[in-house]
Amino acid sequence: MHHVLVDQWSQGSSPLHARDPRAKLLVLVTFLVALATTAGNAFPTLAVDAALLAAGALIAGLPLGRLLLRAMAILPFSVTFGIISWLAGEHLRAIALVEKSYLSTVAVLLLVGTTPLPRLLSGLEALGTPRLLVLLAQFLYRYLFVISEQAQHLRLAAACREGSSGAHRHGKFRAAAGALAVLFARSYYRAEGIHQAMLARAFTGRFSPLNPLRFGPADGFFTAVIGAMLILARIQ
Amino acid sequence: MTPLIEVRDLRFQYEDGTQALDGINFTLHAGETVALFGANGSGKTTFVLQLNGILQGQGSVTVCGLPVTKDNLATVRSKIGMVFQDSDEQLFMPTVLEDVAFGPLNQGLTSQQAIEKAIAALKQARMEHAANKAPYHLSAGEKRKVALAGVLAMDPEILVLDEPTTFLDPPAQRNLVHLLSELPQAKLIVTHNTRFAGALAQRAVFFERGKLVADGTVQEIVQRFDWTYSALAPEDLRYLAQRRL
Image 1 (cartoon, each protein chain N blue to C red):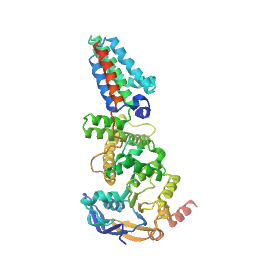
Image 2: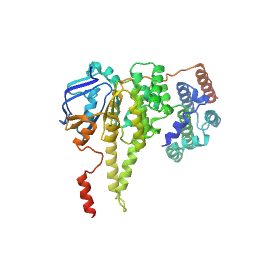
Image 3: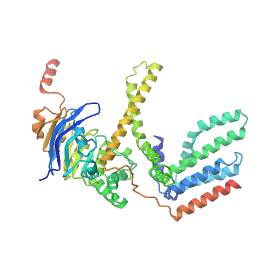
Image 4: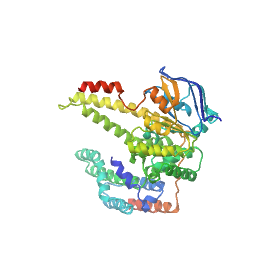
C-alpha cells in the first residue's frame, strides 16, 4: 500500500526526524496559514515556500522526486476545481488553487515522512486533539492493512466464481455490495476480538505512552526560525 | 496444594439462548499442561474466556486463589496470559515493542521498566530483532511469537493458548513447540492439533456441547474420541480403496 513507503521514510534519522512532533505540527500550521493567505500571483513568496519544502526534504534525506510525485495525488481534485474556476473566468484563482493545494500536500507529506505516526498522534494529542480522535486514527491506521487484505480476499473469491463469461454489471454491483456488508460485519467482529485482547492484558481504558514527548531547546529554535522565515516571506 | 485454576459447576448462556457451558468442573495445578479438545462450538473458547473474566457465567472460577470477580479482574488478568487465535487481533499497537510493553504499562510499570520487561520477553520469544518493526510486517509465525511475548511480559503464572497452530506452517509449529516447552508456566492449550498437544501436554480434557465429558492423558482422550488429525477413519480408507478397484 502507498503509505508503507511513507512509513519507511518516517523511520529515518535526520535532524528533521529528530524534532519533536509538536514543533513540526506548529510549523506546518504556520506554513498552511501563510500559504492560504498568500495571493495566487505572489510568486516570490510561493517560491520561498517551495524552496523551504525542498530544503526540508533534502535535509530529511527523502527522495524529492518521489515526494513530489506522490503529492500529485491531490491534482485530480484540485485541477478539476481549477478548470471550473478557469472556465468561470477566474484565472488567478484557478492557478492559486492548484499551486496551493499541491504545496500543502507536499508539506503534509514532508511531515508524515519525517514523523512516525504514533509520535505524530502523540503530538496531536499533546496539542489538544481529543483523545478519542487520536485513538480512532491510531486504530484505523493499524487495521487498514488487515481490512484491505480481507477486502482483497473477498474480491478474489468473487472473481474465482465469476466464470469465463464474467458477471453482468448488475450482478457485479450486487456482489460488491454484499462483499462490503461482509467486510463491515467482519470488521465489527474483529473490533470485538481486539477489545477482548486488550482487556486480557489488563487494559482499563487509558493508553499509557511508552516514549513521552520532549520539546527541547532545539525544537523551540526550529519552530521560531522556520516560523519567522515563513511569516517574513508572507508579509514582504 | 492449592490449584492454579479451580472451576466449579460453571454455566454460561449466550444472549441468543445458546447454552455454551453446562456445569463445567475443572482443576489445573502448577506445572501442568492441559490440552482442551472438542468439536467447533463445543465451548472450549467460551470456557477459557471465563478464566480471566472476559465472559462471566454462573458458578465459581478461582485463579491462583482469587475468585474471578469484578474487583479482582486486574490481578487475575495479570496471572493469566491469554494468546488469542488470531494474532492480528492481539497486536494492535503500532510497533512490536509498544505492543509487548502494553501489558506491563497497564500493570502500572514506568516506561523504562515496561521497555525492559518487553525486551526481556521478546528475547524469551526469540523476537528481539523485531522490536521496532510494525506488526503488519511480520509473518504469521513471528506474529504468534510476538503475541506470546506480549503476555510473557506480564509475568503470568498460567498461559492460555487458543488454537496456537492456526495459520502456522510445520516449521513454525515446531518452533512454537520448542519455545512453549521451555516456558515454566502452567498451560492450557485449546487445539485440534493432537500432535502439537501430544508434544506439550500430559493431560487432556474433552468438551462436548458445553460439557466437559472426559479427562485423561492425551493418548487416552485421542483414542476414546477417535480425535486423530487424519480426516478419514480406517473404514473410510478401506471403502475408498475398494471404489478405486
